[in-house]
Length: 143
Image (tube, rainbow, N blue to C red):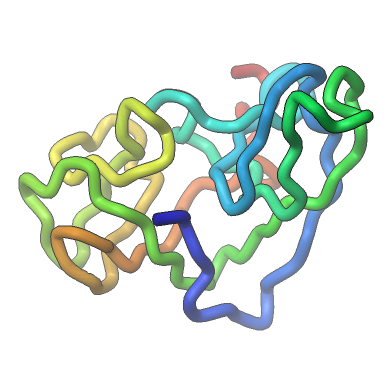
């Protein structure tokens, strides 16, 4: 199951970022900013500050895979996202928690980065707001 924007807000938009060269990015995956390019999140630390959700997937077979092509990434500071739960321990409405070690699911037992706020859902699929976005987090581009 992929991450989805289920309740868009008036602040929904796409922000252009360069993608990291030679980095495959799945549709609707979380991306993080490193060296001013977006890479698909692959760890809890990557998901500490979100650049956006991948709008246009990139595979190793794509002609622009090896380049730093500028692509749009979905951002919605007030939107509600559906995200699979990897670890449900401590699941509760209002919980501030982190991404999992895969960077693509929620870990309700981890609270180092407090990137996600649970606003609904259940222990299989949480409904969350994303609290930390790269475009308004001054330390995001130095990860």
